Amino acid sequence: MSLACQSALRSCARAARSSPVRASASQLSRSTSARRWQSTDAAAAPTNPKIAGIVDQISQLTLLETADLVSTLKTRLNIPDMPMGGFAAAPAAAPAAAPVEEEEAAPAAQEKTLFNLKLQSFDAGAKPKIIKEIKSMLGLSLVDSKKFVESAPKQMKEAVPKDECEKIIETMKGLGAVVVME
Image (cartoon, rainbow, N blue to C red; front, side, top):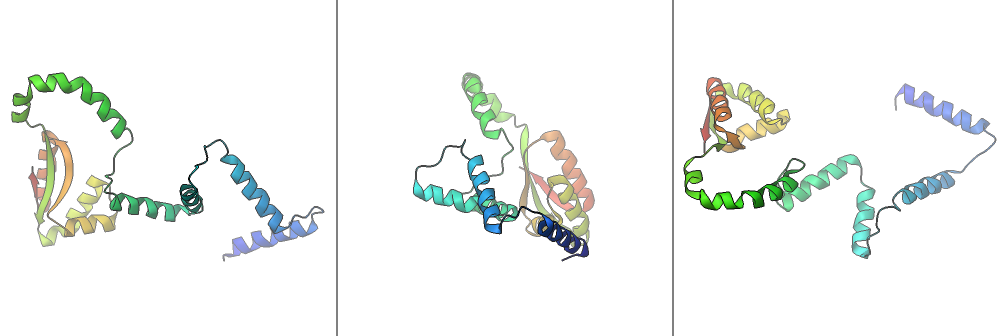
């Protein structure tokens, strides 16, 4: 424990000893848990005891454990990372565009405007530069960027406009990587 933490602990202990009103640790924990319990009264309590048990277990997790739980559930249930509003925006736009799609199905199939970018391969000497570029382009951590580059061939981006695809391909080609538009 650091010196600052130790001195703060000592001063709190002195203040608690000199205080005329003392509350035991069990009383404090009960009042804290009661307040926490009352703060969730507005939410509807699940009626299924199995779900209630799961909710109780999740509510006791730390932030890191919760993040690990979310990532594990995403991988196990094959849930893609979607931006907020991704599900709400798609169904609203689909019914409005349906009549137009039926009339112009053939021309739309010929003109492709959005492409997927795939990192095919890279020059071994340019690996650090490519890792840095992938890190900045995809917003990954350095470790994740390194794993991404080492696992080539791998899809980099989906549904990218043609102009942006060409810029990315030129940038990556200049660094020594082979990127393909699909």
